[in-house]
Image (tube, rainbow, N blue to C red; front, side, top):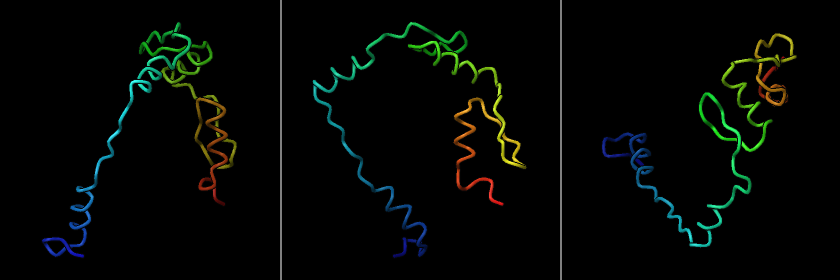
Length: 101
């Protein structure tokens, strides 16, 4: 199918603009549950961005994002990337699309 200007690309653009938006209906019960999901109120805050945390570990992990520290380098030969967390490094190294010989 072609669009009004004879170009199939413009037709695709026009048809995507006509997609229907999904209407979300929240009952009173759902809204009440959502307002009380956090069982323990945040007691810890980031001194830089005022983000709130419920655990000391979560705040400490967050503070690394402000310091820019990247103490976990990729162990694959030839890769010079480094990561702020060990789990980030492991996720990177497990990726099948990276480090192809």
